[in-house]
Image (cartoon, rainbow, N blue to C red):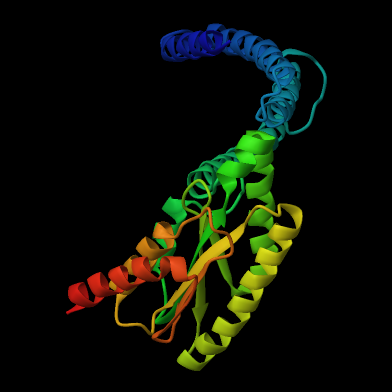
Length: 303
């Protein structure tokens, strides 16, 4: 089909050049023959495009049908005794309508490309299982943070136990449930990101230090509520979390917090590590040695 159009274009160009050298009558009939060939070819191509559901087909077919009818009208007006009015104007109007169809086709093509681009962008930025942001999207978000923000590190407890006991399909159900729960509970306070198999990070921003401190209490309430909901459905599980704010000394402390959260023994459920406003509270004596060592590393590195 594409080759046919290219061939027609080459033949039309050749005949157009030859038409300069031919007598008027010969050139007149030659252009009419080319016009008839274009009418047949364009309608055939339009119908063929419709059969393969090409989005351009409707515009191509409508535009070329109008143009073909105008060409037919023009040829009849010059080759018969019929008194047809304004054939040139009819052709010009048809050409204008054909151009509008081409513009509509380009507009839809751009819309489709935008949708495809958005889909590729979403696939690159969102986790396919839980539909929350992934690590790549988190990195983008961290570069755009305001002066006052809070990060929450969350590890799901005993995910391996759920996989071993109920199968990996149930583990996927668990992760999707937790992610949906986080999104619903957190709402407009921040964004949820999945950074690993069972690890999530929340990023929450505030307009002032006071608002940030108020947000901290809300976040802790939400986390406890999520932990209760998860434990109710999967008694062997729960969540372990750590909270850090931009009010703390620098970003290194956040890194240390992450290391602390990862070091928590995930076989011991419902362990909470909270760091907020330079205050550290740890709910597990078993983790105290790990936390203390991590704090010492942080203090040494910060100084």
